Length: 171
Image 1: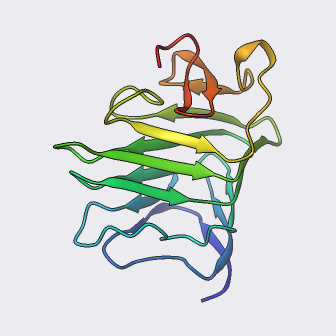
Image 2: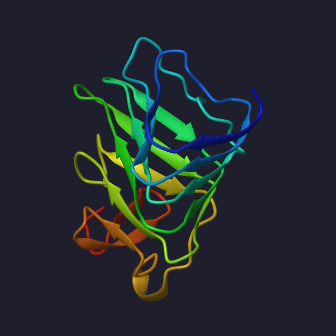
């Protein structure tokens, strides 16, 4: 289908051959989750229209990579709207693997907050989850903003090679 997608509760899981290739924009509301997963039988690199904008209003965006694979997904502009939202990128569980979630841009509206998470070492070298931003954010004081944190405990910073990571984290 084409048009807007609203996830207003529960989890919309895109696994196996599932995709939203015709949607123009996605809104993930409070207590709702959009899960983009390459953990099933098919590793797709384009489950969501690359130009589709995403608005998180207290919702969760999760990207799950495939074991022993370099998984990647690209989204359009992402807006962190009202509430505390979460963005997670998790590589597969075994072997050499990675999970790169690329956002067209990242902006904030209506006092929104975001917590970036990964299973290990967000934004670091090796088999870790990465959240990359095509339009590199400005970094006043080396942080994305007081509204962006990593792992619930540290300011979020940005490195064009490794993506979002905790301020002062190695690599």
